[in-house]
Amino acid sequence: MSNILSASSLKGTARYTWGGDEFLFVEISEAMSLAANFKSNSMATRLGDRALAGVTEICPANASLLVRFDPDVLDAAELEAATREIEVEVDNTAHPVLNTRLIEVPVWYDDPYTRETGARFRSGHQRPEGTDLDFAAEVNNLSGADEFIRRHHSSPWLVSMVGFVAGLPFMFQMVPREQQLEVPKYLSPRTDTPPLTVGHGGCFACIYSVRGAGGYQMFGIAAAPIFDPAQSLADFKDFMVFFKPGDIVKFRPVDEGEYKSIKDQVEAGTFVYKQVPVTFDLAEALDDPESYNTKLLENLNDS
Amino acid sequence: MTLEILEPGLSTTVQDRGRFGHYNVGIPQGGSMDQLSAEIVNALVGNSAEEAVLECTYLGPKFRTSAAAVIAVGGAPVEVKVNGATAPQWEAIELAAGDEVSFGFLQGGTRYYVAVRGGIDVPLVLGSRSTYALGALGGYQGRKLAAGDEVPVGDTASGEVLAGIAPELRPAFPGETEIRVLLGLYDHRLTESGLATLLDSTWTLTPVADRTGLRYSGPAVEWKAREQPFGAGSDPSNIVDAGYAVGSIQIPGGSEPIVLHRDAVSGGGYAMVATVISADMDQLARSAPGTKTRFVAVTMEEAVAARAEGKALRRSIWG
Image (cartoon, rainbow over all chains, first blue to last red):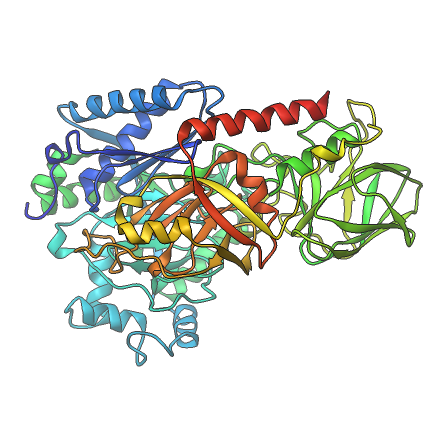
């Protein structure tokens, strides 16, 4: 498939550098790609499996990996050597797969809450008239907001990184680069974004986990929580953050009625996300993305 | 025993040594911004270094004790008042039930710490009592204190109350400071003159400084022009969103460097060019707006040696 880095082109290319005396930073690639993200996540998993004394945080990101360590326990050079070994192991994996889960995320697109927020920050926007969806459709040469929304929820997205603030997933669309939805961020960040807003900046989608500032264009609102410090819902019983790097997300459009019904279930404590375990095969996904995605998404129908 | 909060102050939060192991999902380490000051006040009241304290920012709280208590106040210089009468900083203070503690104006720095014998006893969340207000997590109900709050204090302390702390161990709060950094991460994306500007200029801390990060004013810093990689955003200071090292320095658009601190956002799309060494994070946190700051490049060996010196100093506090 065109323009997408294959796994083999990233062999041995990582750049190792230091963030002070406590952080090792490994840049897998300057550019975003499924393969770079896959390599970052695979290295993170293997580094975690080694359980090196002195490693305190392992943070895989879109196309890089950040490792925190205690230099009193683990020498920087030793950590770098171990991480380089792991890079070689990952590069030499013949058939890389990721055992993960496919999650359906209900979204009310073009909802009044998002419209209201967009309207409040209209002056200074790239396209002061209309909505962020209108703008996104225009810059992607699509017929209109409806077509953009259809493209947004018809293909799966890989959670390529969780962070910025607690539990916020960055998602990368699992389609060839020329089909990827790309939208510039706001020219000047908003001072307010409602929690659960579905946003988009550059090639990344996100769901805002907490209320606050934000620079991503806004398309809709997710119906169910993704960060729950009170851990009141079943999906949060083990941990207050729902998403993990490597999760695969399928957005499902819902209307006002269903949005409200999901809200009621959340309120009653009965809501659970529809999710199924899946094995993500990088080579197959890169080889024929369209058939691979169709096959992958069928898992949700069978469940 | 509780502290009844009569006035909350500007931003008073419960903090401890921090919350580690969840930065990979965006939950920052948090913890007292000036760890050394917090550690000293804990030592003064006979607490262990792990106990939670109150972190007071600029304008402190006013509180009343529900029972006899021992407290100590350290960090930024401020007048401490018990029932209106001046009490010392950097010494244990014995309080009777119903005593009221309040504070005057800061005479430097940004934050001071109140330790109470027994420790602030809010529930542990993910292994820490630190407040992460953005995530409404930890501390007292996940937020800064408000009037009417009754802050619980533990009833056991492991150590003896200390007579005092040697003056030379007390942190300083100067208006000019040198902060040591290790170059790296994306420093190769700056031009030679851009890098020289970062290291040769005197930077002034702006009022945009909080637990997340500190923003500095000064000259423009030049980035190398390039055709941006896919997914990286359009400005030369942009990268594909990556994890942010705590203490790392980013220079969005080539102006006003931001140094991330203990409540750092865990990642984003701005290239970092250097990172404050762990030994100097407390000193950075002591800066008040207007502080003239120079970033001095050191080697990894020097950073590790400075860290060891800091550890030795802490050991001397605990005797």
